[in-house]
Figure 1 (tube, rainbow, N blue to C red):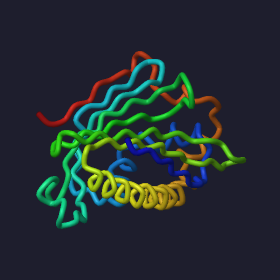
Figure 2 (figure 1 turned 180 degrees about the vertical axis):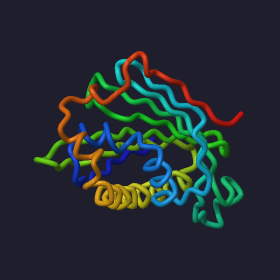
Figure 3 (figure 1 turned 60 degrees about the vertical axis):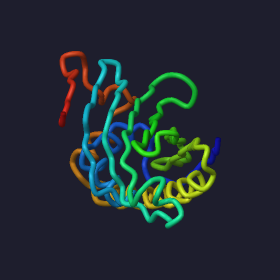
Length: 197
């Protein structure tokens, strides 16, 4: 089991990030495309609970720069399913906990826990705690390097997104809100969205 943590600054407070940014469909697709070089992203299912908890399942296919020695094992790309849940209670909550399950090889497990820590007015650190498990240490080293680069690019994509949307009317109205759950749907708005087979 390989574990590592990535921390980088984010020009937004935690509550606003979870309300406005993280679950935005356009942001999510932009993040996967630009930070992780994904050429296929399919949101299979998303569920929103009355209390603000969420789950999301997506199929993702990033383009990877796979070393020749590993191409027989994982190919030129690695399609996987992301199964994530948004936890609003417990240690380090709120946080997004995701498991990435590659279709090939099947003995790889990637777990990423993402949370924000407030560092000042309008400022946070976004923290990603990653766990990698695979019997092949070369695959683990390759995935660690790939994820570290992707998470660094994710911070850059997020900052560009925040700059682009900072002055929008929606951002101003959300800034006036307090608390996290007020921005989540009530029971009458709970929905389940599915695309694909």
